[in-house]
Image: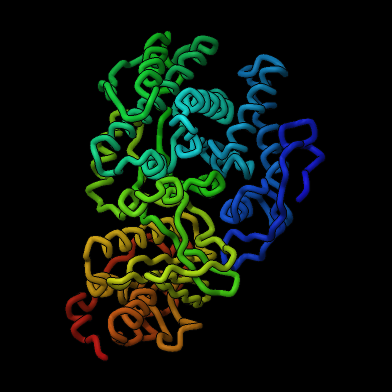
Length: 506
């Protein structure tokens, strides 16, 4: 172990023991030296590798201090931080949130990208303490986030993006079912606390900078009783403080954003209000295999993990979103999982006796693709696709689609229906398949993946390769050719006729 020095000297980082590993943001990237707190896992190391610009060594203290220093200096210049003491107070608060893995700004701030819209995310499970949810600490974190976003927006932004992540993990740790009235009540209280603290902070900024919007007390009544000690009182106090503001500096503040690598750095396992996919996850092992391990939420949920973290259907998420929507300033995004380097490399662990998995790594039209599957007693249970070099939006949509398939499989949808839906879809990347002895061409990543699933999980059924014309240059994976992100089903000939011509055999 070692400790970082230089720009981090005489800060809280001085006392932080670091460990050094080699990590990469995706399976095809060259690993880079990464230094991070000794207690943080390899998933955080991969996220840090994704957040840091360039390809050289990266240390969390120095990378964090770079954006913290920029933010503090800009706050002084804008007059939002009155003096050096105020700037250091904000810097200390931001360091504390990061070290506790409670909150941080989005990836654009870490990269110093002035064109990226600023966002700030709070990791809900990190606010759990021995006596329950740290409501006062959470409200303080919201205030810090609002001030940071006001600075990042140059004191000109009328709409901020402050949100939370891993609601499913928080509810599981509190032993509350995501799809229960009690679970939704606690989620509503968290959203109400976020809204109240955020608008109170906006009101304080309005006192010094001037109000731009009138206070609109159009909140619904928050829950009157909750199974979490102190949360009702904290919500009431935050809303009362917001109600006393002279006006607001911002028209909107609370908005759940699509996750990026910051959620992974903080340890959040789901984005925003999304339900958990399962109580376990797949990890690649150093020997090239795959193992199934409990999620962080499962470890917090203990013996209730299987029940509390069972896959939920879309109706569960819709019910949660409907309950929280009155407290949010924007609709929640559909992407569920953090946009991180797909499966972290872990020390070899024995796989559970009830499950087994497989990993396929192939090239499709020059693009590296990794398919991971997990089987249970009743067959295929989980799939994930990693596209190493494609755009973040494209990867996010593919990840969301795989999550939907996983949820559908858990709900009893036959794999054959997904194969019929996605085999022979046409969009880039497409072309020659390298690394699969049975499939030589694919008209899309989904075409290869679902024909491979048919081979592995539908009794060895063979679907013939598409023609070279169907995988031609007009379907290769340039950015423009990747749109629309969700592929259309074949239109010529009609899907039904096409599939009658390509009968399942074997």
